Image (tube, rainbow, N blue to C red):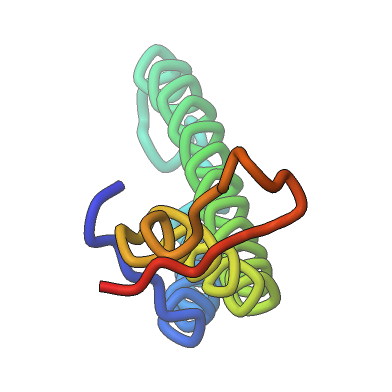
Length: 122
């Protein structure tokens, strides 16, 4: 990724919000409603409604689990990012220093004296 910035606190808040959404989804009273023949007045309609309700309840359960897992992963990513950010910054600085033209031109090997490293400035 180029120009990607992660803010651990924002990731943690997003993960927590997804957990809140999961709670809202699973607490919906309509998910527990079941049509009966006496309410619908038609046994064929009740069978179709029950099938639809079961499929809907299953879809909602899958969605809720996906949202919950995404929230977990965001929280975990935020913690990992926070824990490893300083290490990553130090690695980048080391790489940048090693790739710097000043660093590369700054030390030269003198073949006549294998034990000598001559500093080349300018």
